[in-house]
Length: 323
Figure 1 (cartoon, rainbow, N blue to C red):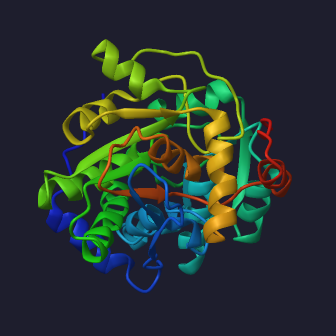
Figure 2: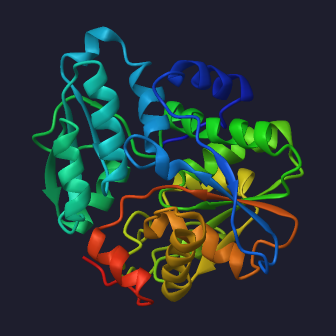
């Protein structure tokens, strides 16, 4: 099994220096809902140039790759957002980037990969998720930048926590979408090093909640997985090394229904003029349902790369379908 040590606060601060000037310092704004069960704040990672927090980890990792290895290019395995982040980061250095994507990847994200200069190879969902563990794909060359299980990626993600603490020092709780665990673990590492009393909760869609199942079982277990419009997160199982980090850094997993998530997409658009994809809205959905408790709750709006048709459905009060 791959093993990772928890990123130190010094490593997170080094990543912050490494990505400065390449990654946006995103705003933290109050959600304009007066009757919410907490003071809910939005950390707007959807405003990154690629529409997702993934730019932080991708840039942090690429900047550490020795120049001699760059000639072979870089690659990742991603439903879309890490592929876009790595395409951007690699393109800034003139490096080729390839992404292995699931065969059902949203067209909006594939179009963005092309626009950013990257290329992609499709794989079945089973092969796609297996590569998270095997870290290999026949026919794809270059240096792998893992979408979540990579120390430099974790440190880059942790820079979000530093910004939150600068803007809201008395934060009580941070709620973070759980996909592979890189965002939760990076933020958790930085927060627990500086303000261990702050709660850090993962958040999952009810249709795919492998972390909640793993925490209940005492270890990773395979769960049923249903495709949904919350396509940026979810998998059949938690990778063992990420489970090991989660048990040290995360205070639990909160679940949100697809209906609650679609409602959160609509509410953020109506009240704050914020466009969020499903994965970027699950944290807000859980907070608005009261599952994150009271006090000052920061929800990471992790991405805004939602297909326009799905956004229209949510804005009209419906629940978008998968695909």
